[in-house]
Image (cartoon, rainbow over all chains, first blue to last red; front, side):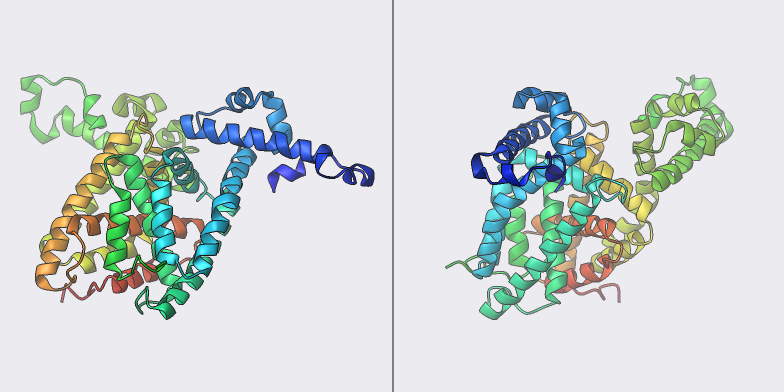
Length: 214
Length: 214
C-alpha cells in the first residue's frame, strides 16, 4: 500500500493508544484526501486534476497530500484501492452464493450511475498498459485476480445450470471482463449508448440466466 | 480530415496540374511524416514520442510537421486514419462477402502481431472519452461506424446460419466490438495473455461458426 509507507514510524507506546492514537488520525486524513481526490479526478480527469485541487478540497496543502501518498500516482492507486475494498467484497460474496450473472448485471447498472469513476478506471487502465506506468502492477494484478474470481464463479454457475456448458471457464471469465470494459468505453464516448441493455443482450447471447439469484 | 485543413489554398490552375503538381508532393511528405509518427508513437507511446522525434525520423523539422498537421493530436488522428484506410476496406469487403466471423478472427490475429498500434488505439481511445479531447469526435464516429458495419454483417451471417439467432444484431455488434477492445487491454497488461484463444472461445460461446469463409 502506497499510503502506509509514508506514515511516521510509531513507537510501541504510541501503538498501545489504540484506535484514537496517531495512526487513527493519519488514517482519517488519508481517507479525507482520498475522498477529495476521487471527486477531483472524477470531475476533471486524472491528467487535469492537480494535487493542489485535491489539497484545497481536503483542506490540506499539496505538500501534505504528497507526504501521505508519495506521488500523484500513489494517490490514484489509493483512490482505486478504496473503491475496491468497499464494492469488491460484496461482489465476491454474491459470487460465492452462486449469483454471478445477477451480480454482474447489478455491477454494470451501478457502474452506469458513476461515469466519473468508470472514466478513471478506463483512462488509467489504458495508460497503465505501459510497463513503466506507476499503476501497471496494480492493474495487471487486478485483472488477473478478477479473472480468477470469475472463473470460480462461472464453474459454480455451470453446476447450478445458470451458465451453459461451453468454452473453458477461464477463457469465458476473460471475455466477460472484456465485454464489460469494452462497453464502458463505448458508453463513455457516447452517453446515449445504453451499456446495460448491451450487457444484458450479451448475457442472452451466451445463454446466461440472469435470474440465478432467485 | 485534420491533414487537409493545413494545405495551402489551390487555384483552379494548380489543380489542373494533376497528380504530379504541388498537391501530390504535399501528400507525399504527409505520408512520410505519418509513417514516421506511427513508428515513433508505437515505440515510445503517444505521450513520450515528441514532434521532434517524428520530424527527425521523417527528415523534416518539427515546425514542418506542425505545418502539415496543426498539432500533435492532429498528427495522431492522421496516423489512425491512414491505418483505417488500408485495413478497413479489406475488412468491409470480407463482411460483404459474408465472412464476418473468420474476418474478425483474422483481425484479432493481425492485431496480436502489432502491439504498438494496439496500444495506440487503446490509450488514445480511453483518453478520447473526454469530450474536450481532440480525437473525441474521431473515436465517437469510428465506434458508431464499426457498430453499423458489424450490425449489417451479423444480419447477413444469421441469414447464412454462421451466427445463430439471438439478441438484436446491433447489440451483438456492440458486444463483439467490446470484447475485442477489452481483450486487447488484458493482453497489453500481460503479454502472456492469449487474446486470440480468448476471442476464439468467445465466438464459441455465442455459437458463431468460424468457418463461414468456407
